Image 1: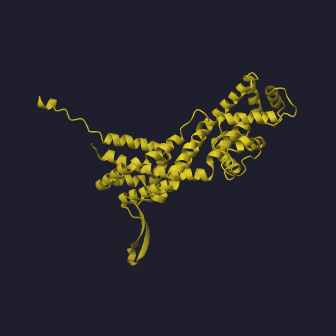
Image 2: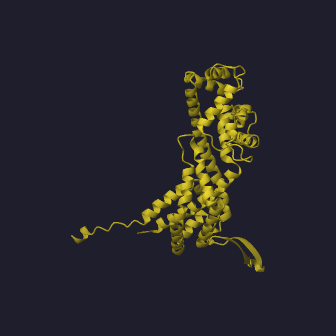
Image 3: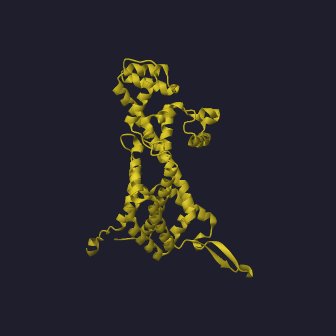
Length: 374
């Protein structure tokens, strides 16, 4: 085994980032479950499929700019949070179908977080077939009539796309369902990308809050590790003893974000249910909070109120006690660096920690003294 200053400093920082990334992920998962984020994002994906909700045209010339669009869409996200079926009558009918309604867990989370492609195509066919007022001799004729006359009042773009899928299938119902399932899977793949981007945004916001709350100042931590060999050694030992215990949690986070062949990211939702049921989010949070306290004690970074006799009068001064945290702007910059590191996610730091530990524990090859003996 060999080590030097740079490797041990890097190892200490990576362990800190891993620890607080896991903490942020647990907090983010708690928020996701409280607000039923996966089900809401599934609804957003279906809304994009079945209705025309592109609001950028409402902005006119300003709609060409991402900056204005982002804020405008954020406003609509708030509206859809409280009214998920606003101006979407077909989407409401879709969710009220027994095959979809039965997938909801309870009245508080009545909308499911996962729909299989087969259930989606079956529900679409049932809705279209039942909308035809007169009896048709075959399902194909009923489907053609439903799409041509638009009895369900589908959005023009959605109706046209379904009609094209029906024509591509040669009016064959099994092939038509396969085409619908392919369309659904493609949309859900895009939705999984939206979820990952949303998760990273959440982690960034939670990261800056955690950095400020726990005073995780990357700049100060790096300076402490470079200056104090004893602290550096203790943090490396802490990383070696605690990191193996994070394997199961990190593995769950990785599996949660793995795309599956059928219905993309929503299939992976089952792994996080195992994570919650088996280990308890609250228990994991408590464990990580305890480890964070141990790391802070090793580093000696804290806030405190100390007596100050400057000017001949006794006062109490509250702030940072460590000499490396006397500049407020540098402290804020350190928090921002920590937040950016947390937004990369725990799997990234866990993988990097494993590589650094492996490199650190590798015995260097013996020096070649052949030339010296000649």
